[in-house]
Image 1 (tube, rainbow, N blue to C red):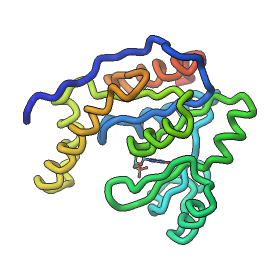
Image 2 (cartoon, rainbow, N blue to C red):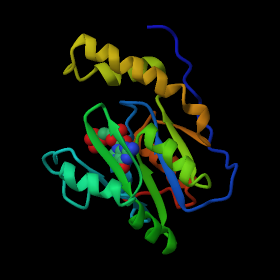
Image 3 (tube, rainbow, N blue to C red):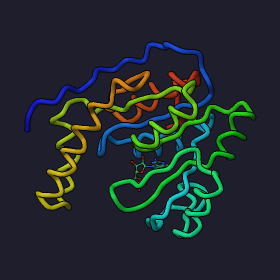
Image 4 (cartoon, rainbow, N blue to C red):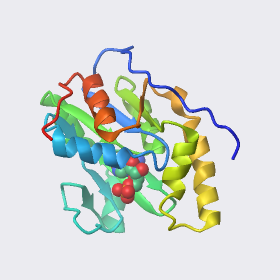
Length: 204
Ligand code: 5GP
C-alpha cells in the first residue's frame, strides 16, 4: 500500500459556534463508535437520529439509533424536501438527516451532532456553511488498514475496494474545519464535546 498522508489533530476554533456540528471521516475510522459513546455518556449532546432504508440490527431501536424506513417512505421524505441531506452509503442503503428535527433542536438551543458520511457532510456544507465540520482521522494509515481489514469478513477484492475508497475519503480532510484523531474513543469523544462548547467529562 502506498503512503497516504493522514492529517494531524487540529481543534483550534476558527469560526463562531452555530449549534450544529457535523462529524464525518473515512470508512472504518470509528465514527459510529464515537457517536455511540457520546449517546451513552454525554446527554447534553443532541445526536441527530437519521432515517435509513437498511434493516435494524439486533439491539437497534426505532427512533433511538435510526428511523427505519421502507424504500417508498424514504422516497416520500426526499420528494417532500424533508431531508437536510441524504446519500446512498456503501452502494446499498439510503441514509438521510431529517431537516425538521434538526431545526427544532437548534431553535431550542441544543448542541446538535450529525454523524454522517462524507457525501452528506458536503451537502450540509452547501445548506448550512455556518455549521462546524469535524473530520475524524485514524492515528495512521496502517491503523486504518488494520481496522478495515481486521474483521476478516470481506474478500481480498472487497478489502482492496474499501481501501481505495478510504484513500479518497482521507484526501477530503482539508474540506473540514477541524480534525480529531480517533486514537482512543473516550478521548476523541471528549475532544469533540469540548469543541462543541460542552463540558468534556463523562459518567463512566
Ligand atoms: P451504519 O449502517 O453502520 O449504521 O452506518 C453506515 C454509514 O452511514 C456510516 O458511515 C454513517 O456515517 C452513515 N450515515 C448514518 N446516518 C447518515 C445520514 O443521515 N446521512 C448520511 N449521509 N450518512 C449517514
